[in-house]
Amino acid sequence: MASLPSAPNAPPALPPSYEETTGINNSAPYPYPAPGHGAGPAAKGENVPPYAMHPRPVAGQQPIPVQAVYIQNPLLFHDRPVQMSCPSCSRMIVTLTTYRAGALTWLSCGGLCLLGCWAGCCLIPFCVDALLDVDHHCPNCQALLGSYKRL
Image (tube, rainbow, N blue to C red; front, side, top):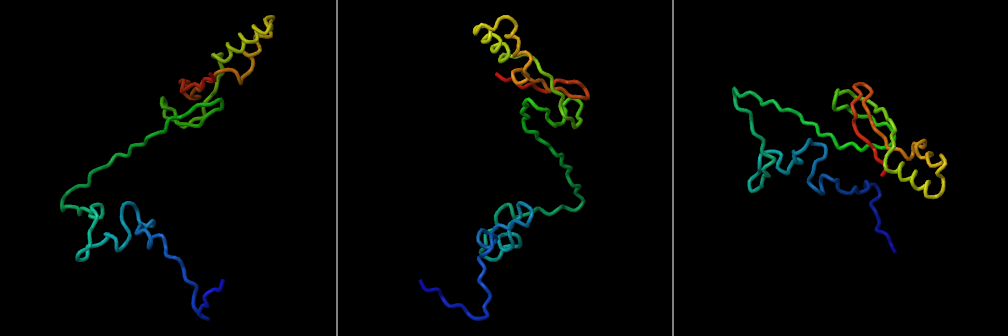
């Protein structure tokens, strides 16, 4: 296959930019479109999208204060401490974890009893943290923040 000859001093051709191909200007704050795509006054025959029209402040009118609302994603608790904001005392904390017997612990104990380990060996699941449920508490206000149930 033969390649096309290039001019001796011609700069290499660059591909079109993202803004040129899509009309979206990523450097402009949302929702302002790229220049030439409705950002300025419309030329004759050019359609201006409704979000490109910005209301101008009226003389003597005070700006309306806006309250920011923060939405926290639901927090999933596991068997390790979690860093979070305590909903009770509103402090940034790392949870304290405590272990307690849950359904998996009792099922393991019952299973060991059925296998013949009834002379004390059936109590081993109560000593293994991997079989116990985990409660998460706030170290500041001691509020119960959540639980991790193994079964």
